[in-house]
Length: 166
Image (cartoon, rainbow, N blue to C red; front, side, top):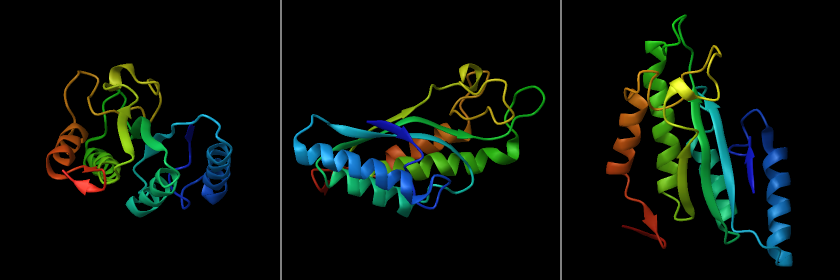
């Protein structure tokens, strides 16, 4: 199952959406309905939502059911100028946001995938919008600070595998 707006109760969708999804997949598990995991579509911005604690709690609830979690369609919207380039002042907070989400995933052994919605702002599903600079590479295929933040997370946060740090 893959859905958006289920990452943190304090975010725009509120607790109702996550709880409804959780009740549905828990029911599937209890009845033996085939389900392997839940995808968290992460079309987010730099508002601070989801928090690390909120996302971690939701990932934990899903993995406690014996299901995998995937972060899917990850992008972090920031504004662009008239030429379609990211506003420089927004780049550091975008990088921090990417790093926060990946760190939470790496710290949960049931979070088995982290996928962005592409890699370059040049071919984003948001192209042409005011907040289109959502991916780790810019329109010229150059890495943005978000790319380096993701690499830092991979290098500094040992993943938890089978309940143990690797």
